[in-house]
Length: 136
Length: 348
Image (cartoon, rainbow over all chains, first blue to last red; front, top):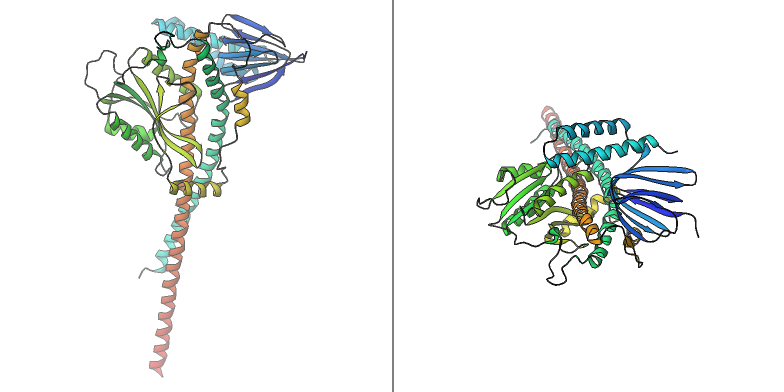
């Protein structure tokens, strides 16, 4: 059996990643999933989180906010609303976004503000985490 | 008779104008190419999304097997008494009849829904300016409002078209989905200029909500291009080196068609109904996003065509002015010769 699989990450604006990978982790809504070549066919929704995949000795990190993944034995396709590579993330902006979200979190009056702030905070945190991990 | 100096001055001014229109045409052509590429880049996502939704429709029992009623609120039909209309025009003018045509189509739609409560969301400065003169701005209607049906403007979006962001479409969609689910509105339509290629464009009124059939768009009203418009567009596109045919997407579409539809037993991490509910709002969003992208491409194409014919008109005008100037000059020379000749005759 082949020891790699095809990987495609598609966002509304472009095809963000088209690559092959030996293993990857995706943030399913029910928890992170590890995927190796030959995985059983699977469909899952993705939460806000970090995608990591390894191709040879390079590990790639991406931040995603909401997505949808189809896993086949030889191919993984991910639809994501946003997918940012570690090197694309502006660290300063991410930090600012985090601060803003924290502010809102404290001042938010209604339930709605609260959940929104929580979402924003999560997103900002993931982006920071991804940006800091860079490709190693 | 006009004097030579005046005519020369006019020729110079028209030449300057021609320079500007020519430059604008080339700029529009470049922007059009970019807009086309963006629309193309957005295609795989849209295709995959609608394909996987289609396959989920059959698996998730979206429709109640006994009553045939849909189980998802965005599929629910209600009598159309309160309608939300999203009108997409451009932010700038000088694009021929582009904005006018869209607003005409919107007006026709409003007439066809006479007597209903219609709320308008205006995207683009030109459309907003026009609609604001005719209709009052108002707050979104409350669910149980007893006020008489009227046409009001509930929102305006200006300056978002220069670079259409997915997040903008997403916010807009989120808002209308919320209002639809809370039964504040019964239907949502989108008026825009559909753009398949330079020569395949239509003005359409598309039904966004309720979702009728996943993967097919419900067109409530449309209007194609006239032969004459097509001819002008072809000429402009040729002069600017813009491709006429839509780009070939069959290969990419074939790949997209496989998404989530392989003939295998998938493990669904979440119940299929839940997945469907998570995906449907994204489908609505992508429809709006897609409409915006096409409208932007169409606007640039319209401006390119308009500027091309303006350039041609300027050339014609320069030609006829040059002719007139030469005639005047000839006449003047002839007159002088006659004067000299008759002067000499008188002297001898």
